[in-house]
Image (cartoon, rainbow, N blue to C red; front, side):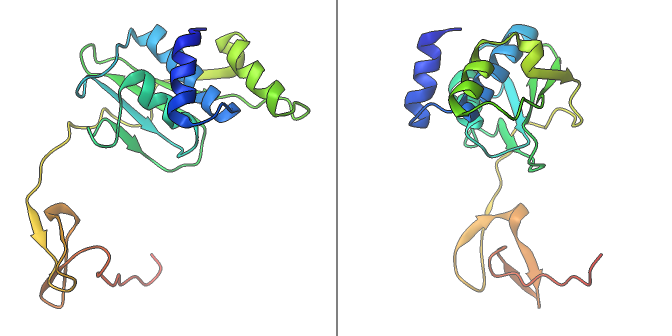
Length: 174
């Protein structure tokens, strides 16, 4: 384990915990299996299926961030991370395996950080294709609240361009 990198993740996240350890080890596996380097732009993409502590390790280790558009959230709630290497076209889905229920928090973190990687995770091909690169969109002013939003997030409502906050969804259950 790279102790300096772990310390950097802990500093960014604010504390150490099993959740951060999950993201740390998932990234270690992805770096090793896909030959990933820190992503200065969008060379590496991660689609995380959770919004838990481990995502902070993903940002520190891979350079994937929401702001760059190479960290995407697909909220299944699963402790799974999908990594893509744009340069090689390779991809990997890293899924946390169930753990023994009788471990306390410290034991769980220690297990995640020190157990052989194949005991902690299972690996598969991602269920999602490689997301396209981030695009820039024109800003449109909402005719209700006066705030700007990118054009792909606007809706038409009673002939007005409105943002998602002002839009009143019409759904009849399907």
